[in-house]
Image (tube, rainbow, N blue to C red):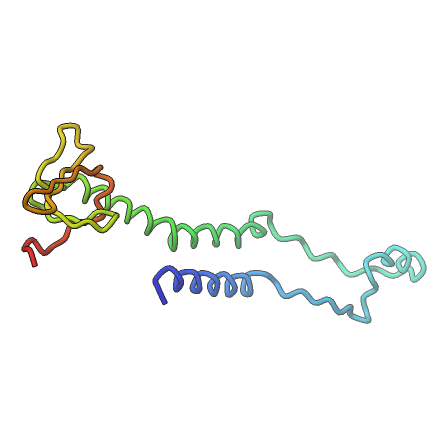
Length: 149
């Protein structure tokens, strides 16, 4: 399994666990001692008794607590790592210099022979007599091995 699929599985398991723990279990079976909600007024009038006190509703923010927790998890599991990767890529592209051995997004491997004055283009030396001009953003990464095979 890849990192992405493990992240999805982990996220779904965590969401299921959180929802199970945070949401109260609702019982749909009616207790015989308590009448249905529609007949409370009628039973009070006929029996003359008192009804049980209503349970106070939780504060409003408690209803949104699971959504806030899911949002925080979403940020730390998906968005933050992606932002770090984008920052690392930006720093790598800014640090390109002559004689770096790089690979392009298309799989072309070459050595940087020239950088344009505006910084948008990179000229790669692929062979002794072959030079190809690429956009700087098409460089996928720098290869650590600087020797030819």
